[in-house]
Length: 162
Image (spheres, rainbow, N blue to C red):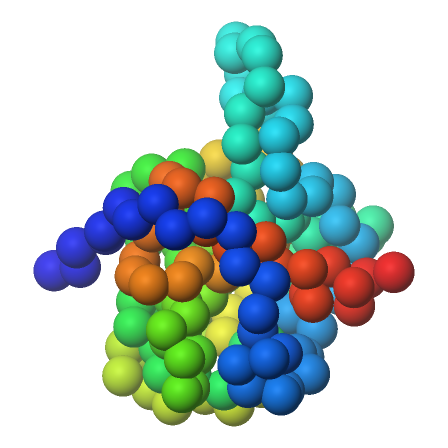
């Protein structure tokens, strides 16, 4: 059983300084929802909501492959039973960073598997928040499996889509 820990840590923009690695692009497409506050996308809800990651979608609106951005070990490959749906958590090598790939339609990895940057993890989908269309929710967390606190802005990944 996975325990998801909620740890408020502030925003960290330190990936390249920690590892010196350039990330691999996680999926084809463009950023459809950036990191930060946005209008609440949930049906029937209003006001601002913090989006602790980036959403990436392909114009074809078809499922696309999802690749590991950095090398690491798969810690979770399962359905969350919540709005993130089918997801993969990867613990990035030699860091305290966990990477979330969410809303997948299919997972191609298993818990404990070692992955390299560019390895196929699964395919984009709309699991969990099915009203939002086929996309990848990509997020990075420092210090634990935080799922509800904005503790890391994936700036380096967003740069790949410019």
